[in-house]
Length: 216
Image (cartoon, rainbow, N blue to C red; front, side, top):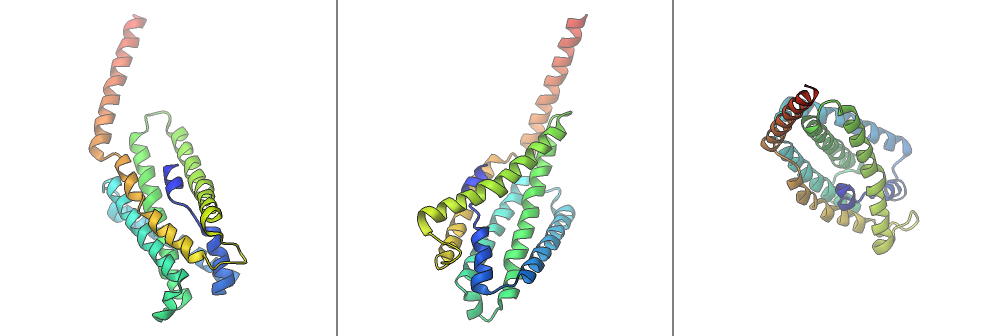
């Protein structure tokens, strides 16, 4: 929820910018979406091969850095600087928004799911993973777009017919990406998780012993 509040999404405005300003066809938009899904699979493979044993907080730190780089690339695209340096729109989109967006999704969701698996008590795993899925959808599908729409309505005023302020939205997205660093201390380290699990195991043994004594 904190991520949704501090990380506004302007995806709806990006769609109209791509269609009305860049002149991207719906076919190419679908192709970019497909490439993004493939990149997400690549991110999963990278996590499995190289990052599975790494501290969750460290992986999320990498994710924040990638989000910042991707947000700056989006601002460059909104300013059309890619054309000034000789990079076509299609090439820039594929190697910035699509790749960074998809890989950071994998670097964000998988570590959180791994963390949840480590800290969830027995017999409530299904409930907790359902809760995680619900909160993630609330974050990405409701809170982030809502915050983006509110910021635009209050301060920028971009519409599908007037996209002159779209670069300002991307600049806001760039600066708010740095707020991810403030959320990292909320993520426990492996030592904290192991200590918590040991305390929980001792408490369960104590409770089982007390129940056994009461039955006697």
